[in-house]
Length: 248
Image: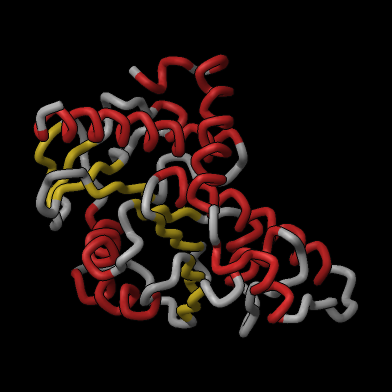
């Protein structure tokens, strides 16, 4: 297969995966209508990204109506508007993070709830939460609207080489080496946060799993990329059955 054909096929797959991730976020209650952004660095392209257009509900997103934008959020391909304030953050994280082929940002209910409580951290108290041991960063400074790249640079620095960033009063950012990996982490992150919020609501002390046990359980995330792909493909099959237009 010629290199150009490989890039085209990879781009097509990235479009289908990103459209599926947005639809699945709606299905699992991890969205806010037209708000927040999922982005993917295009294979074989310098500083070009797929981004969901501002103004379309995530349930309307298809592989063909995603935008191609440059590193400043200017639309290169597709119809619609790129919400540039958020992309000031996405582009800088894509450039800075070694993991950030895909960047997902949303205000999931339970994850956001944790960002509203001062000094709260995701604790290793549930099986799902153990996978994030040593891999979560926290930004405790809420800056409101983003007007230039400086905030993106700052957040990229806070995130570092980790795959999850909790934003004070403002939801989460998750990065991954593929859409499947990033969405898998988003999915299990929300379930981890839900379990913690429910446990905190009892007012009793949380029972932490010892860090060394958590680290041993997930063994530096060995095999998680394959597991994420299998999980994501299984969820996509639900869309193939119920909402096949997402891939068009």
